[in-house]
Length: 76
Image (tube, rainbow, N blue to C red; front, side, top):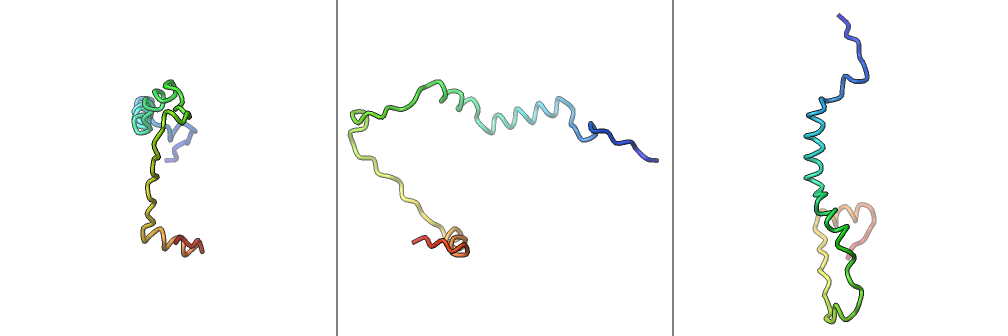
């Protein structure tokens, strides 16, 4: 018995799609992004940062070095 296929066959019920969207929103932490959007930009004035801030070191692990060497990107 052949079943007719419509474009709606693969769509989940609205409740399942809402749960998926809510889970995606929590994973993206949209509330934190919305909070950061209204707080304003950080200051660029030297007086606000009078000390020297050292940058973190970047470690290249063995797997990344192998990939870089395979692509002829020499990371020393």
